[in-house]
Length: 223
Image (tube, rainbow, N blue to C red; front, side, top):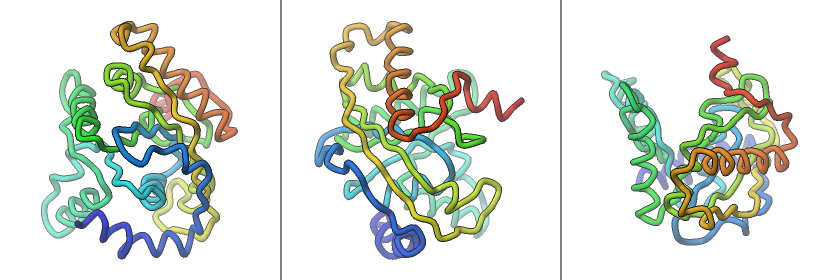
């Protein structure tokens, strides 16, 4: 219930007023059945606009730390992320990425939409960075189609380092679904997983027009 209130009553009207989002290629998103949405990631509000423009419910996988804070602020943050479709997972310790993939498989098994940013973090400079392979692993194992989606204008709406939203024209563009089911028998092959990941990133590069960097965004940020 809170998801739909968040979308249509609380945050949605503000996003529509300030962002005037335009959707391109919406027909590429299946109306039913499991789907993986793979997008570029420019700023925090990417997820909000994605939730806003897609009629079906979208779920993301988020760090459990977002849901464990105390006090009024902690409860508000927990409600906010839950309402926005975030699923908490414990990503601490060794093999930290596996719980996220297990949660993703559960979303797809429930015929839902799992949204993920393959770069693993927001772009530090507006360029598109190398994708991590978790998304491709799930796609190959499950046979679920991957629908690429790119955002335009969110970096102006919510500039990096700022908390205030600014009026800016937003465009959300969906590409044709990518079908990796033909590789399902080789889903454990690292080469196949890497190839599928790169295909998704190449498609995002073509859709967005971003410059591609063959390095992980996290390593660039760390440096």
